[in-house]
Image (cartoon, rainbow, N blue to C red):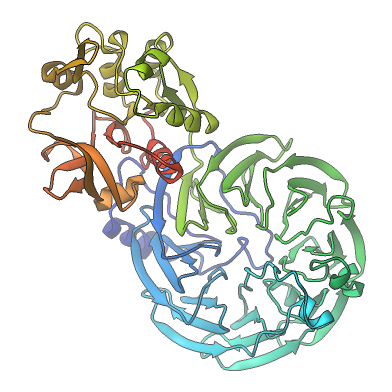
Length: 627
């Protein structure tokens, strides 16, 4: 469903090249794309890559939380934000192609069919846009949002949280666009003109995304029922009342009725989760129950996300249960489960051998579908309520930090990641908390190196073809790593073979310690080590820096305080500039893949947000690693 042309990753593609890819390579490709990969909402993405972490391809910033699941088509990545803007980004680079400002926050995913983009907003607006430029074609409006379950049943309730952060994503069937509204209606419009075709009343908000299979629309409602309607005229075929339909949520203190999960329709069966602590498998033709999985003994956990179904297995996430598990599609028997560190309100995605899951801890988990074991996880600094979408070896998802992430899952082998910290060196910098850097990266599964293991690690990586990165939680390079000739020692050899170093203090070898409280600057050694000119730098605490576009791409915050700025030169990629136009952060390449080389970030201190940015910078690898 998602047309993303496989291009050469050796080097960053420019926006113009990406647009060319869209216009030429995908012109004859699929004309539609939607949430969960297909109209049946199976949650299966046609990507056969390895599922091995290959680094951060790019990050793009919006003005608020991103809860919309990205939609990919023809080189475009479409994603809505709570800032009320739908962004069209280049799927290769994250560069903005166009934007559309709607009437309110966008938490629905975009649906694309025949050159039209369809989105809905919290304020009840439903838009059709032109895919090429985001120009509005037509707009419809839903009615007033119905009361939530508590209000319907009691008029008021002391617990106000209802988790209403999901909006229905449209489906398109033979020129008819079908979508649920907060007004309790399932709406059908002419996709070209926006003229209403039909509507169907349910007894609650419709946040579930309609699935369409063989001319039938399947959708859940906050009234606790699943509906099957004819796509052509909205006539009711059957209604299945879940257990939640009979429950009074006020008796429990939380919602036990609503269905936010979008049905997945596979092999004549409808799979859908509910807040009544059940996952249901229904006969698609008759609406009769085939089986259900009962979570009532597991904190009565909600099943908010939409199940993914592939190869006779159903994959589902839970909220208070804090796990993801696999069930036999035939009878609901559990095959495996993996505990999550937090709740998950998102929908799992299947791509090749892996299952992709996001959760409120801010992590993307990649799980082996065969046995349920975690392969790896990628940590972000904020909770995730956007589900992953997979295409061309990249996992795309949004975050509550306002960022859209593109994480490569196409590596031939895992990235070797390490953090260096030495207790003796730390004593020479007592005012700098390098231990915080050490601890953060250790928790991120970086191998901890010291002065006895550093050289072996550098030499081993120099003889390998895979990608690697090392963070130095110090500003002192051990003599054994520099070597007797710094221009050819283990540290420099590692860089020359495509390695990546993230350095946080004064340039390595610059500070030559003569004795207690006696330090001189050894420019010759530092310049030989890095192969560049360092004289004329501005060294001071709290130098005001502003990130360049390249710096934002790498993961820097827009503005920050630096401590050691150098005059700009042609052999540096400048990530930040100070008020004098000096380079406050920069990268020097040594011929490796994009994203590698010596990354200089002389930060005087770091908080949690800064540490998270450092991790993004260390793992920013937009180019394919050398083979």
